[in-house]
Image (cartoon, rainbow, N blue to C red):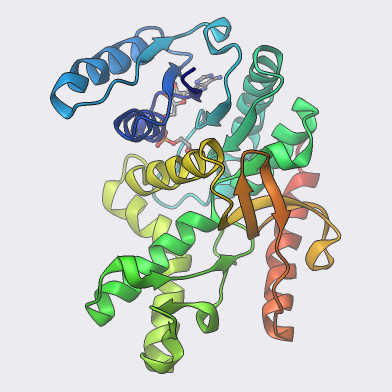
Length: 308
Ligand code: APR
């Protein structure tokens, strides 16, 4: 039987996730949006590309959550995106309402699914989704660390003129300007970048990674990034459906790990058929741990501003 993935929100990120999942033949895709015609039109367009691109995944568009029933995975991208001069936190109140109502419907139709949150502010929306769905924490995760790490890798690869395939990076913390890139764990084919780049250059890459989402918003002016978030959400879907046991940084619910409780933060996890199968605790320096805690504090403060 083919896998089924529902993507909620047929905007820029949602449509890109649907495209990548279908092209990689990971699953049949149901694209959902509140706007009548938008998911139907994009799904049909994508389906008509399938003979040329050579994929047999079936994509359907709908405004009815009944069509999402029994999904294996649900990727949530519905909500407002950033515009210039907006932080991810500026989306907090409006997107909380959207995520609450979407989660209720998703959980009702697919009570055994795994939910991947993409909507920002990411760590808080994932928390809202956990609480509203009543799912176990291993089945509600957020797409952030993998994207922040991908951005870091792209910058390192360009700086050293090496293939991105040989780069590895790990970025922890909340998906905000206080995220915590860990340069000493970033390597090119196992060689730490601290051996390959100057401290000044690494600092510049760290800073650019922190602001990478904003850099794209400043260019686009009418919205935020979607190719890279779409690619990263798809990578998480693949890890789960193929039970790959990938070690990927994701927003995970912490119950004491890294000294943090009742909060989502980007940490390395093993991703497989069970969703988050293990939270991996790596040794952090005092500074790194402090940075992770500061970033989680902001998330906790923002959680207090909303009613779930
Ligand atoms: N139910 C379903 N879809 C909804 C709902 C809802 N209650 N509310 C809004 N939407 C849809 C919108 O109609 C729109 O089509 O969500 C879609 C969002 O698409 P875009 O505006 O193109 O935003 P996008 O760039 O896809 O970003 C979506 O992902 O990366 C994050 O920060 C980003 O929070 C933002 C989200």
